[in-house]
Image 1 (spheres, helix red, strand yellow):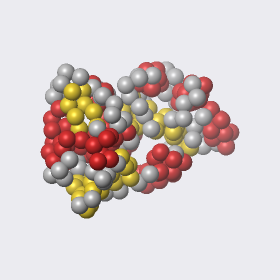
Image 2 (image 1 turned 90 degrees about the horizontal axis):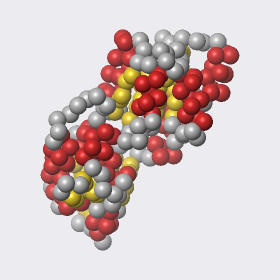
Image 3 (image 1 turned 180 degrees about the vertical axis):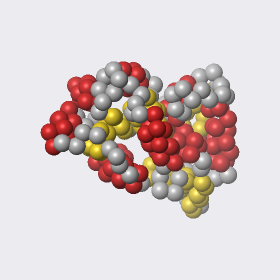
Length: 236
């Protein structure tokens, strides 16, 4: 799950980002509304949740909400603000925010609000992602092969899990290294040039231990593709 955090208070922004990363979210943090809008318009990056402070340099959190809803965006939005009057909450919700969290708040409440928002989205409610005989389990961060010979399970690192999830969400599609890097790594993280290829090798090695290393195809000079037909063959 990729999160766009827009908070101009440095200490608070750092703290929220650290909390979310500990929970295995991919987090892009910016400190003004104009930069946030440019991130939201980036066609290479798909966010599932945005956390907006109300008062920001440039575009306000309210204006970001309005612009997104005018585009018919269904992005989940959590508004953070010190404004705690009823009329402020009504304005934020009417602008398009899905929930409203008043500062100061505790870690437990922030995470509970995010989980509640996730439950509103059918796509995010699922505890597992399955493609043929290949199953990703979100609760255990493992991959399972459900084959005729029985079920086999192996744990994945955070990046391995995120890459496999992205590939499974786009079966049979060719995804370039740039697309994978832009979706899985934070903007500005500047990973080394071969980081995607290195992570794919590690992931493929684990899949090979389940006798299905050929599920991820490399198209040299183009990108990578998850073979959906091969995942169906696992259970035949």
